[in-house]
Amino acid sequence: MKRSAAIEWLARALAIVGGLVLVLITLLTVVSITGRGFVRYGLGPIPGDFELVEALTAFAVFSFLPWCQVQRAHATVDVFTSFMPDGFNRFIDLVTELLMTLVMVLIAWRLWYGMMDKIRYNETTFILQFPVWWGFAAAMFAAVVAVVVSVYMLLVRAGEFKTGKSAFAPTQGGMH
Image (cartoon, rainbow, N blue to C red):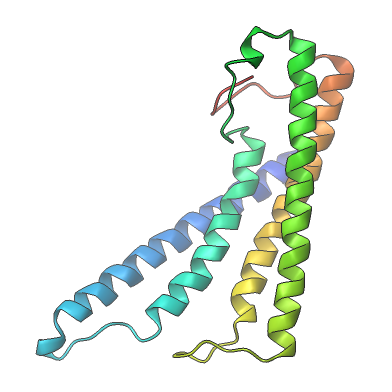
């Protein structure tokens, strides 16, 4: 299977947005902690900082998974497989890609049910009173992109296994 510029762009764009969200989380945390340190001077923490960090972190975590998948940057243990023939390693790649896809589908499915529960019960955060499902929805969006990328990468690995040729040169992370 040929490289898909659209899939790579989607994964990269989501990772960039996730990185920007991490910067926002960092700034929010620094400002809030600084405010706590200067309470005696009339400053204070950002109200609901823990709630915001929780919701934004869930999105950020899922936003990096598609890029990691496209770049083959997940952790690998190649002590055993480095001595195996290429065909065997392509089979391992196919199986691990299948497992990753199944895990991503499972996570997205359970996030969907969790989000539906939060919507059904109108659960809100304690301090800011924003609906909890908003955080679930953000994470769900990133998880769905991760599923799409995982399915694409599964097809890539199936093509590699079938043809005996790698579609991607290794970029980051270790090879088997």
